[in-house]
Length: 272
Image 1 (cartoon, helix red, strand yellow):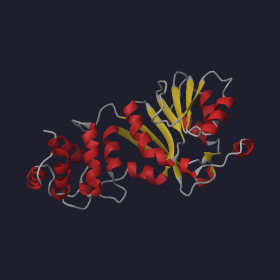
Image 2 (cartoon, rainbow, N blue to C red):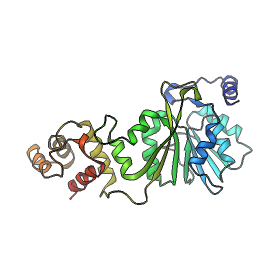
Image 3 (spheres, rainbow, N blue to C red):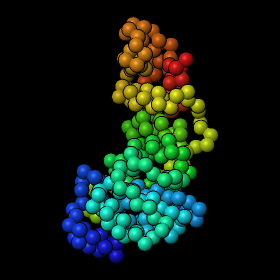
Image 4 (cartoon, helix red, strand yellow):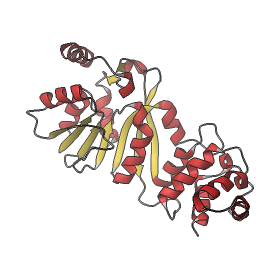
């Protein structure tokens, strides 16, 4: 039913799915109860549906919680959403980029957002302090979030997420659950911000910036990887930066060998 409805709307409004906007519309409603259950939706919750598309998930969520904020970037599809939910008082449709538009308060996110948005959306939701987010994301991206130290998938986003959130990979979602089908497989991901962090950092922005840089130098010894970062960000000569780098914790290791806690220790030491 969802597939036929989406096809009809595309035809009626003369819309073609836009690859640049990552438009792969979910057509399998059997996943909607799973998303709701994983988010433990309550009647008091206000839920954000980021990249709402034609609002099929939005409509399902509206029966489970107090209200839904459906955000859609494509103006043509946002117009359809507004028409679809004109008579539903607990759905607010917002047109625009979810990371940039002004939004009402919400406490949970349940969505199948465009894949290109995944990293920015996960970092953004942590800043918003939501209770949890249940997202359908690219499987490869999700696996990076829970990667082990030293693995090929281990990256800066692994380190940042493991310091700030509990991340769980749940059900696989095959590509034929979407129209048009994407080229990759997907998975349901649950992210819950941690109340008690596994280690403390002095400055989150600096921690992220340093970690991003070090993973561009993942196979170098830390002294060599850190020296240009210190030069560029702390206004020191190369010689002075190298001397400072040798005083850092784990200076004889390589970034790919460091645990998230190790990255935190280095970031804190740099700010002392």
